[in-house]
Amino acid sequence: MKQRNKILITGSGGFLGTRLCRHFEKMSEYELIQAHREQPDLSDQEGVLRFFQTVRPDYLIHCAAISDLRACEEDPKGSYQVNVEYTRNLARACSSYGVKMIFCSSDQVYLKNGVQTPHQETEALKPPHHYGKQKMEAEELILNHLSDAVCLRLSWMYDFVKLSSWEHDQLYVILQNALKNHETLSFSVHDKRSITCVREVARQMEKTFDLPGGVYNFGSENQYTTYEVVGRMLEIMNADPAVIIKDEKAFSDDPRNLCMDLEKIRKYGIDLQDTLTGFQDAFERFINQ
Figure 1: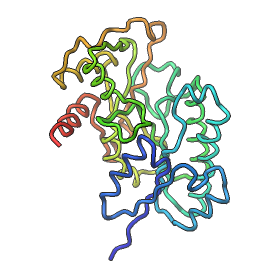
Figure 2 (figure 1 turned 45 degrees about the vertical axis):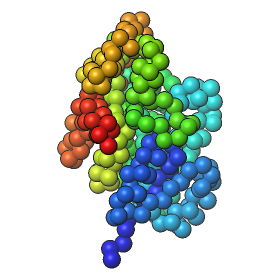
Figure 3 (figure 1 turned 90 degrees about the horizontal axis):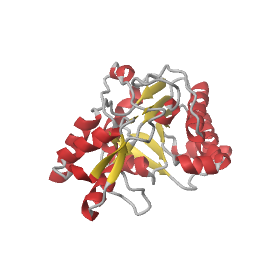
Figure 4 (figure 1 turned 30 degrees about the vertical axis):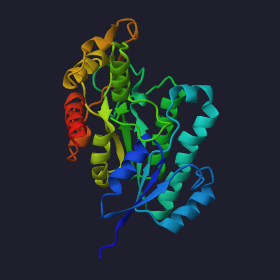
């Protein structure tokens, strides 16, 4: 029998990590190893090395992070330890044991860099907030240790259900709650995001194992404002569009565009669905399951 490749996923109890685990545990060709909380202790370099020596993973998908922007601003030292120092320890372990590292970075690295067209991986970066700065530094240190490592710049992700009570409400859940409670929500007409279904990210993740080392955008392409996207989502749901109102003030003085260009990753046969196509496809699968 062919030996199964081992996938180690950090942050396996988090939003993305949980869904990646559910995806890969159904695949017979992989053995899944979950890492979360204190097992292993990512602050302990020697402990991480011992853990890798014991479990001998073939791939590491590093999801563990403090991704809440406010939390990073309020405790930059604590978030730096998790987002940068833990990542450095894992990169060193991957280097020692020949493990392919897939790092979950963020579109927040593009914030405030002055580019208003879909972002490309080669752009100069100058994120203003601690979270974006920490993700940028983590990318750099990973690639310094591992020339074959893959850094995926992920976008704003959503799902159709909450898998645990501690999860923040995601976009679809927020819309459903507003419809149920007859509330209104405001979305900016000066904001563009690569809004992506987390199930699409999980479905495409295996293909990243064969990518050459480097940085890749990994979120749905989108040409519409957040207000327009949500309006079209409501149409797909056959829901009342009156639940949303235009926010014409937010970002009016400095429009935000975090949409990403996928040209680089398409060259390797990976093509995530665009925001609205992805939502329609995932929504239909969800209601018909």
